[in-house]
Length: 156
Image (cartoon, rainbow, N blue to C red; front, side):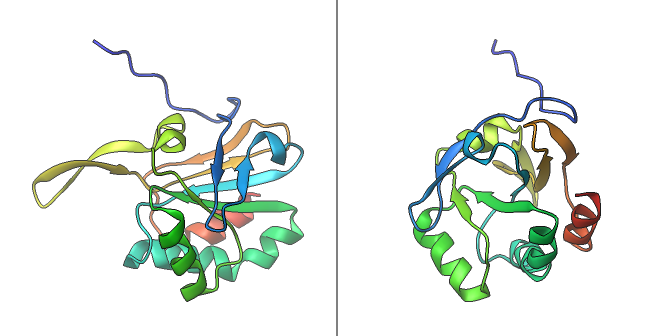
């Protein structure tokens, strides 16, 4: 029987990651050391909740930048899907393609879900604020989209 690793919590060292964005540029937590990182996980490009969440982060992007925070979205969609999603909605931040779900698993957001009586694995909408020291400052799971980006901005 496999032992499930604990989910990262506030105060823990954030799991490192390395993945390409929609342009092919590779991003890693190690390269962002010294910066505050808002890492938000969402299920799919171009779905109503995910679009609303991305646009809320977009609309507050300048305020995050003024607070010296880097916003990064992550989903299992590929770079081509991310590129279209980003262009369609004018998103100013990178979207990482986590097609092998390695980042999702490291952050404990790849979970069993249920919809209309059907069970499947998918992304639990979650946001992690990682401090300049690489430690988790805020962890939000099972995020409700309405007001979420504003709450994260206030916490940064």
